[in-house]
Amino acid sequence: MINKPSALFVGIGFVALLIAGAATPALAEFANGPQSVAPLAKRLSDAVVNIATSQTVKGPAGVPLPKVPKGAPFEDFFDDFFNKRGGVPHGDRKISSLGSGFVIDGKEGLIVTNNHVIEGAEEIDINFHDGSKLVVDKILGRDTKADLALLKVSPKKPLADVKFGSSADIEVGDWVLAIGNPFGLGGSVSVGIISAKSRDINSGPYDDYLQTDAAINKGNSGGPLFNMNGEVIGVNTAIISPTGGSIGIGFAVPSDTVSKVIAQLKQYGEVRRGWLGVKIQTVTGDIAETLGLPENTGALVAAVTPDSPASKAGLVAGDVILKFDGKDVTSMRGLPKMVAQAAVGQAVDIELLRKGQKQNTQVTVGRLEDDDDNASDLKSDTGKDDDPKGSAIIGLQLSPLNDDLRKKYNLDDKIKGVVVEAVDPQSPAASKGLKVGDVIVEAAQDSVSEPDDVAKSIEKVKKAGRKAVLLRVENGKGDLRFVAVPVS
Image 1 (cartoon, rainbow, N blue to C red):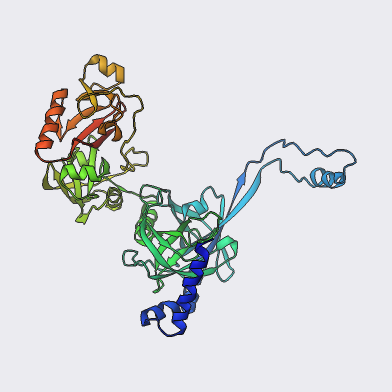
Image 2 (tube, rainbow, N blue to C red; image 1 turned 120 degrees about the horizontal axis):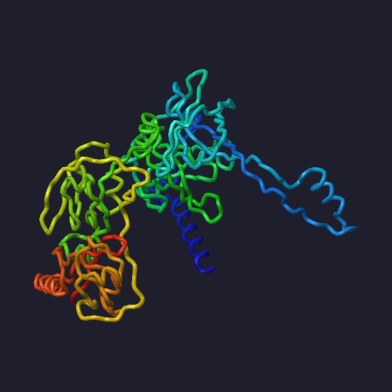
């Protein structure tokens, strides 16, 4: 209650300044908003379509009917509705849904939309701005990871179409225009700005959304987001809303991603993403300190898949990939996006940091299979243990691996190192998620086979003035990760 009057006061003061002529020219221009978008909307609307889908859903057989006591006031009504009119469906029924899309090739009849708009559809109708309608002949391809689909219709005459612009060129604060089919109302236009770029909403491994405050609601999915030149710079895909309606937080797949995916769907009927074959993790502050790097620089290689492009190029666990194809890797999530967009079979230059030294190598990008475990290459294990017993080396009780310990902790014969048999709950190691059964494979990027090896690596780290030792850890499932454990 206290904040509302304050907000009202600020708003009144702002208006008073404008009336008094105290606003700067830039502020006055902002207050006036963009020039009319009527010519733009008129030119683009014919290329934006409404998509209606239908599918058959199996109905529940033998649904029990409500029982109404004899002589009840609504007895006649219930008998009439349920017994004579079949008020409860017993068999299959058809359901329909609505979405949006846009024409990218008027001669060939190619239409882009979201995959979730046409997911499971048995029939897809395209409704145009002039009231005409076409049935989709074929779904040329779909991509569940980017949530995109390419549809084909057979027009009797060329359709109005639109072109892709560059989402890389759009800036936060630039005006944008959305056209779509919110709540099934038909062609609707809304205007807003780009609120943010490169948003990760945890919808998939390649999240890189544009955020906009242009009104996007249910039914806008698959519709275009235009820049003020009338170019498509995004495909409206998702909203954040507690009510189901627009609260000014909408997300669009960037056109730079869309254009590449659609080109492959058109050519191959599928998306062929690049694959490197590495498990990676974030260079956190403590890990960066042990490597002498700024925080959030590059992607740390936790493991390399055997016989993968990365393996053939000589990458090893502990490498930090700094650049891929000449582009800086500024975060862990940035690398999979770069690799995915690289052409399969392309030779790409990589800059990496290995044991404090920068090196350059070249990798030939492989193809990512849909069922490949390396599809995301994003997460590292950070599990914690609740029943440790205490120890001497950074809070760990360590033992050399032998047959009994391998059997006890279900460890493969190929795993080499020292096994954690107890963890002090108050130790730095415990806070970093080390647990009983973990195997320390390397300490300070040196292989270890005895507890003394770990102790020596810790002393080496302390003498070098480092605050943490970098451990490479493997568990019984074969999952590898790097952990930076404070030593002072």
